[in-house]
Amino acid sequence: MDAERCRSKLTPWMLLVAAVIIATGMIVSAWLFSNAIAQRPIQGSFTGTINSGSVEQAEIMDINGLRYYLGILPEKEEDYDATSKQLVETLEEDILSGKWTGFPFVKLKGQLYFSKQAVDQWFFEQSRQRRIME
Image (cartoon, one colour):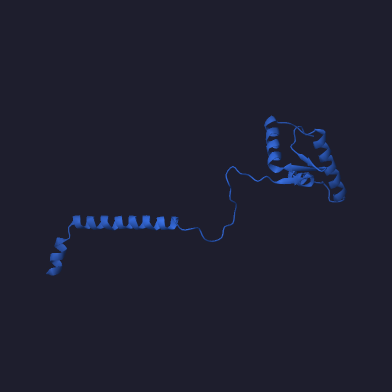
């Protein structure tokens, strides 16, 4: 008889109030848990790169690095060293003579150095103007 009296006292409103209380408790506990996680320092290992916004570190290449970066390689494997040296000399001569108009370089103690970012920008500008280089 007590069980029947207990069941009759459970109205739909009581069930609704209980559901609201449980849902509110779950939301509050999730909010507290997320705040606790957000305040903890990140631990563990990281692999990848971090971009520091507008600060960029330029990569500098010598004439050989530029040759590889541009994909100027000997066509044949035989006499690779001689052909490679000739390609470097031709590339350096073309840059210094102005054949590649406005190509960005710095000459320090007789050596040419190139910024990858400046070279990329130069190529971008050349491609916008649709220039043909021989």
